[in-house]
Length: 214
Image 1 (cartoon, rainbow, N blue to C red):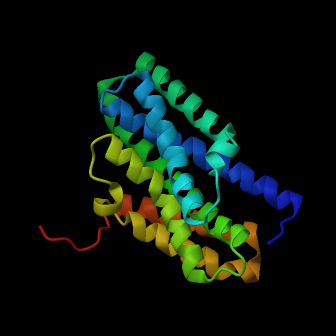
Image 2 (cartoon, rainbow, N blue to C red):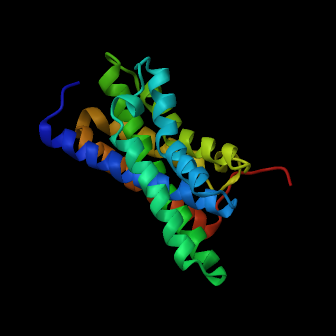
């Protein structure tokens, strides 16, 4: 599916915002686990590009975009390093709640943007994709980096335990994919990403969770 130059620029900007947001969440996760600057930078990079690598492997896009367009990988690493030194210089134990809130917010932004970026990738790289494929790829792109972050930092992945995480991605991906043929790429992606961000923040604030065995 061809896109106008303006649409491509908007999607590039969305992906860069999502990359930085996920890199920040990865960096904070590394800092909480007492990693050194290299570990924090690598966890930031993994969180930011991990979902996209999984997405490209599913769509048989080789080599993955993270290796063909290193600007996003570099941005993620630099963001992780910057966060490390900012926190190192200004860390105060009584601000722990603030850091955790920032992590959740950045994670929600990254989840929303990368979910719809995954939907977009399905429509771009697959001839006549169906909604199921677009939604599946979108969710995998959205949650993949966060799962890798949590596994590498020794934490049970959010997707399995926390406040309506994967379901928010799933709902946003469905809305984006359904709106795509009617509203076009950019508007559909913005609607899906905003919906995911709102759902994640509401779920965090009101402690929405799926049923589990206590």
